[in-house]
Length: 121
Image (tube, rainbow, N blue to C red):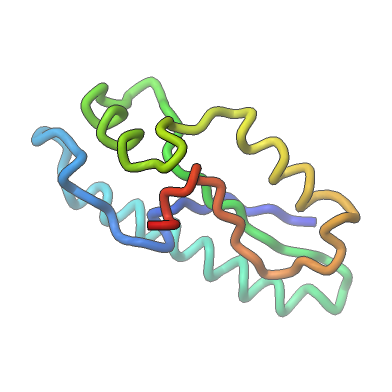
């Protein structure tokens, strides 16, 4: 099983209003374009390799804090998540274990969103 890592920004646009003025808008646009490419690469490879028994899927996380994250962005992002918080490493474990296991034997070419409900709006 191959598990690619996309992003919610690969399936929806970036809300640039959440970013502080010093963050260039084109950086988030480029990030979204790359992550969208990963989501679609997943689908393409899944179709090609399924006959060989290789399952290719993708996990697209929502916001997860990092060392370079601006505090204003983190607060604005968390406010838009129905669960009211950003994600953490533990939030991804179940998705990875599931997609890597035999429980997902019939799951091919899918993009699993792990985003606390961000994309449910």
